[in-house]
Image (cartoon, rainbow, N blue to C red):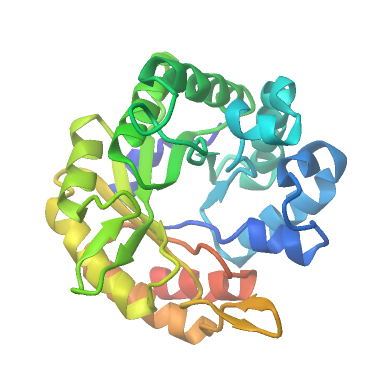
Length: 299
């Protein structure tokens, strides 16, 4: 575990989170549609090297390779019975480069379906699904639980409840994926406004709240979104992880072309807006993280 408490540290200084995992695995040979979490046991050194590169770039927070780690999601790959193993391994791998001076964020992504009445999964079933994953991440050494890329506040709230049910005092973090509508407002895929999404998470006990991903957002959009989140976050710290610019397609490939310098400028703007943790999402690399970290630590 980390030597210092994450929330106590945030009270004294802003922190740098790491960058993309999925695009880094793809760059190392993961085939589209395959389960990247298998690399936690089959190609451990590759996953560790990604963590080490971000840590060396200046990341204080290391995010586990467990985004699709619920047994519901793993079942699509025939791996539901390995959920405990793969999640615990994800945290154990991240724990090494994080060391005593860094913090491991146990990554929990959306479970991959809809709650009733839109889907068949009940809140109790989802709570149990999340709790299993969270327990394994904590057993592997996670310092906090990150519920990221959320669209449905109800799902985020159940994730927070599952984390609290694990009888642990580690912080619960919730970040949503927002899109910009034609009218210029920000909403999740479920149509939820910034105010409602952030308030639901805060009222349920999330100590850190924010946004990540957002495939149609440019860097200026993230700054505007951050201001809206800070305005309603209350006592919760705010965390923003932009993609490396708005993606586009070149020769059949998805390309993110924001430069490290652009990410550094965005970092300064985010911090001035009241954001306390800055990292990167899709398309970000260690080079982006060097720039983000330097901008963060220069203030």
